[in-house]
Image (cartoon, rainbow, N blue to C red):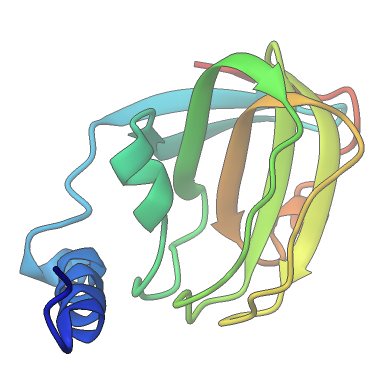
Length: 149
């Protein structure tokens, strides 16, 4: 037997369960690590939030204020694959650095805030660093540079 209106109630109930709160309301307290980004020009100490769970990765930097320089979020997976990101609910422009085994394999600069357009590179990655837009260019990060954590 089908209860009238059940599909609508189920849809409303499920959407209510998937609404995330802002980091100020308790989210965003991920473990932090200091990593070293080694470029041809410099060695940079970065403080990153370590996002290695599906929950942390699904929320990412949504609803966050712009990041200070040399900070970011590092998305980490056990294996390399083609990774796709978006900027939904992310009000600050970001640069994305795609890495495989610690080596930069792809760059996306100045990702458009709040956009749902897919962001990806051609190379498989096991880590992606999100940091403030402009940092990649300012520090002259290039393909082949290394991130050590």
